[in-house]
Length: 518
Image (cartoon, rainbow, N blue to C red; front, top):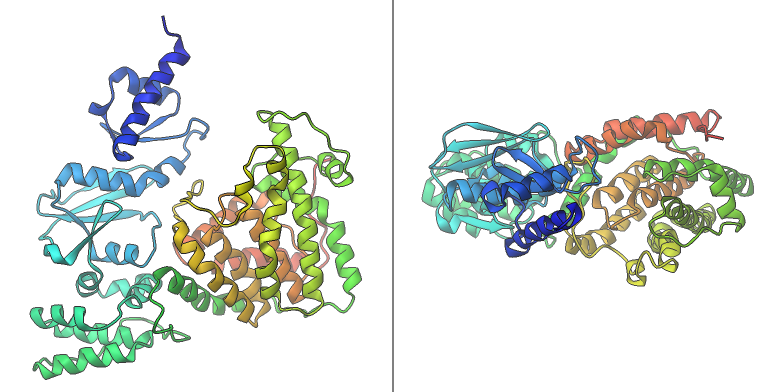
């Protein structure tokens, strides 16, 4: 008679077959037997979304953990909506534009249109919800399917979205507008529908992002067809720079827009940089002295259990744990060893920066070495493959407890060179510190180690500004993550800037370093 573990394994096989069959992220009650469902729920491999609907989960997630839901949100929504409405549904034009613009953050409320809708709200986990609106759908040629989600096409969404979208989601709106290569697709819909007021709004929007030719084409063509068009800029602010005409990647333009629109707020809320230190040896001595504190807190933020004794043993080379992949202490030791090796590589980079090399250029050249050193011990131990050191991630990634969904791996390769161009060209030290850290972790270019590399990057830029090396205490992990979430999902950089500014100001005032347990 099969034991509990064999029964669980059989249930897992049936769950896997469902996922292999159609990549199911939305599991219906009818797809699994009651015994399988109960067994998988009890052991943490399923989570209930609503009555009769489930999503796959990981058993090592804590009670109340939101990661499984956020990671499954879009695939679940596509499966659930297809089941509910067959093919007669479409996301709202506003949500369609955000997805076209590369913003896959989980919305608090997903709005969907369908002629079969009951005009009601369905509560979903973790304060998310689905609002279904009974409405006529766009024509077939005005829709597009992306990852199973039925969207308004880019042009149809721009014409159908509300004016408030431009003020509430300016980055998404500008990134979407920048994807339009010429006015022909929009003009056909504007002329057929007689949309003179919308034409005026789009004319102003395109002029706001520097697309003068498209703006002129729209207004002149509409006027030639005897429509009275009054140009109206729907954005609240002017764009501080012009987006490149030939650049239509929503991901590249999103990074550029985030950087340029956030930098003023950063400069306004961050202390002025002292400038490169003259006493380079003294500064580097401080960097060396702060290592144990920095390693303890940075590794602890990531969930590793390290002690000062372990850190010192690793640094001194007297570390020799048993080779046991299942042993938590062994993995913590590998992480500590990797941090020590990476810290030495960062130390060399900081010396180059203090030698007056461009800090963005140094980070561009050296960050891959930081990453390799961070995980080299795990490769040596056989926990990771040598190919894992090759470079940026080659698949999707989901962040614990975060509604932010990092861009796909193809986009990562497009945006990372642009990110380092922005860092290299940035003249303000505060902007390099805050945006260097934030944009890096927003992109999340690696499968693992992004937070540690992001903090190394932050402190490299701190050195370039002459600020003292700054440690983010593990005790501040929650406000740290909350501030990053507000910047990633709400695109409000001020809380994160103020968070880092307070820590830097304490360092500048000579306050003691954060405690390290003895």
